[in-house]
Length: 220
Length: 210
Ligand code: FES
Image (tube, rainbow over all chains, first blue to last red):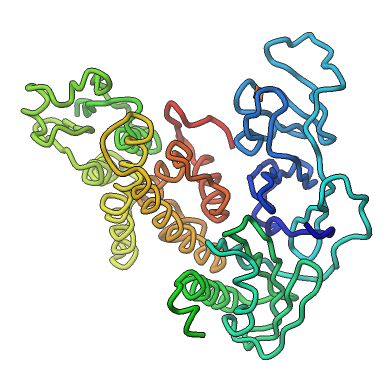
């Protein structure tokens, strides 16, 4: 995997005090937001018995595992084990955390694991439209983005494609999920009217129909 | 008016739909437990006399016996909620609500079947059912995406209707048939709003949080 910041979700899709699972290059990641609004990206695996952390729930500044309720603080350190409420939890019990950032209406993770972080994802005022999950590899999808969204100009940046369209300037975060899936996190630069947002969402749905239908793709 | 009686099995999501609507309108139900699994009591002679289809739920309200879940929901919301919180008389809204109620009844039956084949070992092509259920959830997520962008928090409009309550279990329980919530961000936000409705209840297997 190339080192860099990868978008995992639209900011507005992860409300304070909630969590969601996602996958990047086959690695399962939990994206969660504590009650004060901070975003976190961790390995989606409880160190106790391996339950997905994304099935758990956020309690204030902790995320709790659904299975036996072990609670972890924002640094990934286990702080509370309900079966042993008096126990001083050993420092060695922690979830693997990955560097997270929030910029341009998206939540990002720095990858690959262990690589020192360089800079942050580019800032930009943006309105989140929708995330689009596709049963296709990102490599297969990317060449069709420009035509699919009716763009007159396209430019690729780190983790993002920028499209100039009649509906406005789109900035789409590119998430390679696995060998046959990807996600597009679609934003409009600046602010936009609800009608425009709905029109972009409808175009996104049409794009998904096109890109997932083998015959339509081959015809392009 | 005597309390409506629900022939109920706790793990059946259609029974849960009925309990959920009753809870949200503040209506106590007289629950009559049916040992559907492993006892198959819903297919016993006395139950077949009430519902020859051999399915749950069954609602008995005075002389009225209802066996179709969406008909039961509509009946409870119209007859037993003086405020009529979850139904509407506006013809266009009502048409939209019926559209989603019928989607819940017909199309989401794939999600119900995917869950019973995965969890309870009922016969069925689990992979095909799961794919069909996922397609339905995508349609729901697309719809709620557009609703939220246009400023509506629920399936039919700014307020929750029976449609939302009828659609909720298939999404909330989808992990039981191995479809995760990852790909449905608009439904995740919507489910969270539903969970905060006064009276909202869960069922066994649905964690009580959010
Ligand atoms: S698996 Fe997470 S607390 Fe036991």
